[in-house]
Image (tube, rainbow, N blue to C red):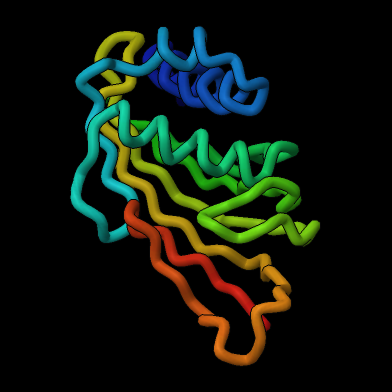
Length: 155
């Protein structure tokens, strides 16, 4: 049976994604420790400023992007979230002009909280959406970004 700590961690996770989807950076900042460490994919750990820049890049490329929380498991101060980010590529993203293509990125995040602040996150994502491009047959089918996300593309 969940205890009040489980409920508090679950609420923090849900509050973070809801604030991110509303682009409510004041609430996001209030939830995240300035000393947060983010490990995304196989990349080196980054601090809050770098991770925020990564999040903002997705928001610019997919301004209608939203997170669907599919499951939140709690173990002590850890929240494990299975979620899906969906959006439409209507803004420039990593040098790729908007294509109008819808993407769906499944993710699993393991987050650690201390009190009401997010201290550590480890995230892995799989992109199941595809971009179409006029760049021709030499266009790479797979691109890995600086944060370790693998983005699948098709010509």
